[in-house]
Image 1 (tube, rainbow, N blue to C red):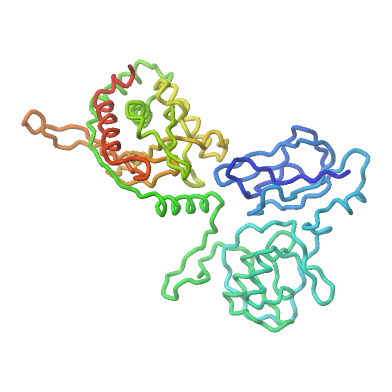
Image 2: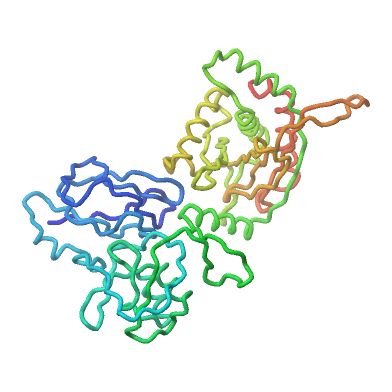
Length: 435
């Protein structure tokens, strides 16, 4: 019998994803282990491997479709010996049995609607509405609800999604064009997606022109988690200055001795120092949960990486037990995967402490947002020459400011101060972190 392929859960936190690309087309033979599609989660883009064998008979969800729920049908395979007639009883109730073009516009169009940048179509496997003449209309569930609330007639709206499907952007464009409650039979011309500047729904009439960029799945997740952190975790901040001259000298010496085998960065040494400091002050290596305080046994350092898709924090696991060369190599590999959107869940989930370094951008000092459920994140600023007092005399030293953001539910001020003191001692006497 036909095999229904569903949207897989690619991480423990995934509830929906974007079907970024089909790697096979209808009619292709599928073998177990073949790569079927690329799925974009809130953190990465991963290839989905076929488990069953057969012929890819029907694709239910088009490329670029956002918000596809986990376990929702996305395609159908036919087993050996089956023909297309077997699809009649196999197509899920939520999927159209055949593609149909959008209903044609009536001959009396109103003024064109100002185009907005349309997001990718919502789940393609949704039922089609029918017009009074029996023609089928492809429309996403969200667009249908929005049209009903605004009193719009779907029969007169031209869809811009795959196969003429009406999507959220088409409804927004119709509303922005003053088409709410138009009489049945009046046509509404919905422009194709464009990058032109346009007002968005609810924008102030006094705002300047702008281009509306739809939120990616990753950006939505970042917004949700950062809002949750600032709302729920009572942040407090501790700042301390560290002299870098000894660390810079050690880095230069180690890189010279490596003869090109590796190249340590200041951030590699910061990660190692943070991990060792957590072992010295284990009360800072914790996370907060409603069930209690999570006391982590190893220093798994989440390192903030600014990728083209957004901020993500790959994890250097057991950083306290790794050498500087291993940390440097692993960090380069993870950063490259983050930029390519290829991180696996085990590579970015489950850290115990975070480091965010903006020193390479010349930022002197900043306060980072805690990566909950972790209790601490260390914000690292730029190293710069500053006047310091040594033995009662004025001198020049390379100084770096670091700020520890702390969740007061799990870590008290004195614990945070002890961690910073341990971190500074390792930065200023870096050979001790190698012991």
